Length: 373
Length: 84
View: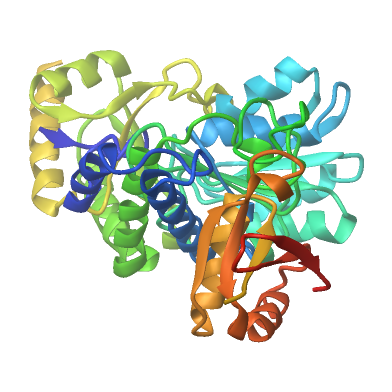
């Protein structure tokens, strides 16, 4: 199979991920649950993972790195901690349902700073214009539909200057773009473990500049005489037994990224997307959503085929051994902004493990499919 | 021989404290807090040899870990809080 759906989950992982996860199952119990060797080994391993993440993402204290089950989980904690009903929340036009649905459920007054695709200057201007009455700002770092890299550093700076809390959704950027919590002055950054960090599904990280209100209560292995949750991180947010095999897998994935370097991985992915986009552009009836500027697009490209539904093309590709994602990608707002809400798109997304040969093979198969439609 | 127990808010803080000590060449063992001083329920501490306690406290404070209580643990098992 040619796997081109890494924006959903990177399927190919460094070999050490599965190996160390299998090893963890029989060796590590849970941090803070007992003083025996298996619990202490788990505590040591979990802390090593927090340290690595703190080092990679500019978090001053490893305690402020919280394990979550995915980016959606982290975003829910961050949003529910800062946003109350009726509050005005400014978002980009490229947000995922992981942001929009919690905001809707809370009853927030959602204001969209809408701007054209691959136009970072316009994005900054759109935010600047609407910032005045915002209580909270949430922004996607990289669009999961189009790979558009939003100018989040500049948006975060505008928020910082005005004292507006800023939440970053780093679902598509963690592992390919340098992220620094302290430098961004963000309150929270949420990221999945199973995408660009090459960890397993069911893992994620929430980087915290403050202690949020948890959305779950339960055992933490600390302050256990009290019926209240501890008010300190990470315990305030980590009720229940930890996913130790997942945490170990995530650490192996992060070590891979750390050693190879986010910049190098991004360079590789961009080159593959350039080859894919060039090839797609040559095909009749194919419309490609690509940036003219290298700096504003990551390892994702979307396209549509005239006179064919996205699902039809996606299914045919799948039948011929190519895994892509077709439809709205859980981000209808991004499609509304880009004008593709009625059709959706077919999305190609790559990882460090894809090759140019795979991209060329995908293009050959697609050419054949398009010719026969 | 006297040991000192550095009381930590959680297992994560205990791990952090032990790593800080490790960086300055002091061995600190993460362990469960003895029941008699675990006034808030389950808790963890880092056990340090008496001969290194001064350096250990300096290292811990330099690392920004300030919210810490210290108990002396005597050979007979008795414990008494000391001024950190």
